[in-house]
Image (tube, each protein chain N blue to C red):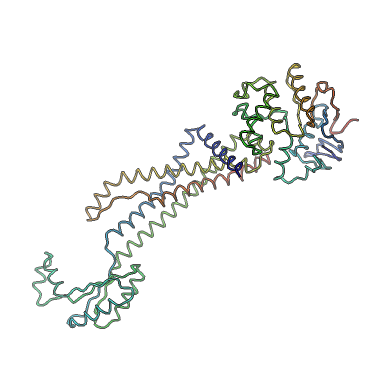
Length: 302
Length: 215
């Protein structure tokens, strides 16, 4: 067990030494891998920020229920109590028609129009916040409310929920797609770098085999090399994304303020950072493994 | 220790390197393989270390048929054999110490014991003071002695050498021959392929001619 650990340590050190032996080449490789990984990582950062923004603006999707015009107040209060006991309803707010009229009058632009009308045009209304705010669940609730007596109109405030939902889903899909493509790119980069490494250390591989090295012993430093490439590339990607976040923070914040939103662009969180570094390492290892399987065999039959 | 039983080796397209070869080498014996260039000396050594496989017959090393060993078993066979290659196969980007250390790292020796063994092997071949030198800085004779140190550092019971004195002046050559004699005296079975059989007067000689053994 101890020997096994020592051999791993030696292989890792050897990989590091080989990497340090060609600093310019390896820095450029790391940069290439870093740029490739920075795109999906940046996408993930934007998706996470969009979700964060949606969460903090507190404009939780709501269902508005308008009573038929001319029904008594009692009908509305009945519906209110019914709603309060209804499963899936988190909160109910009653808007009396007089209050609505007063609020509309107060809000400037509409005052003249409203005053010109002979009677209060607004019905009593109830605003429902659902406990489950997924669009499908909201849709279902609204459909049920529509069946209720003396309810004239139920408006599902879902357009924006849907838009945001679609946007986030699109962002997620794009990030995944980019991640898959550029992950494959990373494997390809590692594959050819390890191929060069195998050619460079050909004599060492040959001698080690003749001195009784197992395949594991021979492959180990190359696999560590692949992992180091992936891990280093992941770190470069993290730095690139962090730099972009810092750079974009001020202009984006300003843009958001014009829409009355507060937006402080967040960097990748711990989970996403760990995922980036972990996936980078794993893909580097995979590229190296495929390259070893391919080239060591060729090298033996040669 | 070694037994060849009607061994032949044919390379495509029909070139017979060895044909119908039978002999035995006893434990603790020292044997010289002689013969003209292309007589099959190197091929014979490669068959013992399973670097090549026979096309006919059986090669037994310590009772084990090495021609039939599966690939994953080869490393463990080779760790029991010390080999000095014709082209030495030193690693020129590693220093003298690291070159000799390699077989021990491969075998998974604890580093402290390994370093002691490496120093002992280097002292044995007279390179004790050149630990940090790169092979390129060594003379031809020193490189050969380095190759020998690497072959014996794992304390193998069998030592194979392919032309270990070629390209060496006569004084250096007899120096190298003396080292082989010393290993033989401490109980190592030694098999040397060489033109210079006169350097090993106490050894039994096997003479090869066009892949056949001459009586």
